Length: 109
Image (cartoon, rainbow, N blue to C red; front, side, top):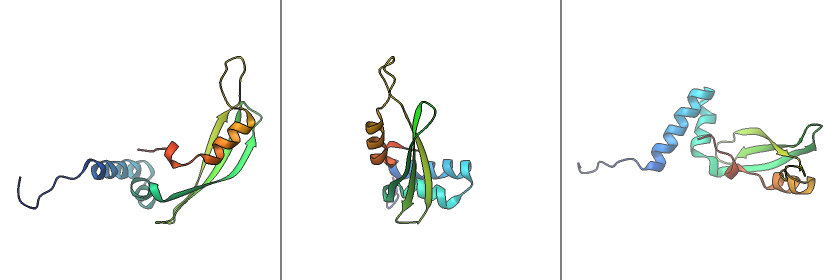
């Protein structure tokens, strides 16, 4: 190996791949940069939680980045409890999970 030549770390090459993948999908360079490099600077806050007429509770979140100031909203659904299938969430549990939902649960790359 030549002096001064370093191989990029897996993390950096992974972030670059994520940047390229997001850029080709969205054609928005600022957003792609945010997804690849600023995910750790996101602040999530729930702006809406409602009991839908369907089989889901719906939450809407505002996501802001302290580094690049990208603002976006994310929607998430939480299945209502189904006693027959023994799955889903009760209203209070779904509201609690939605309140603590953040970028750690969601990944584009």
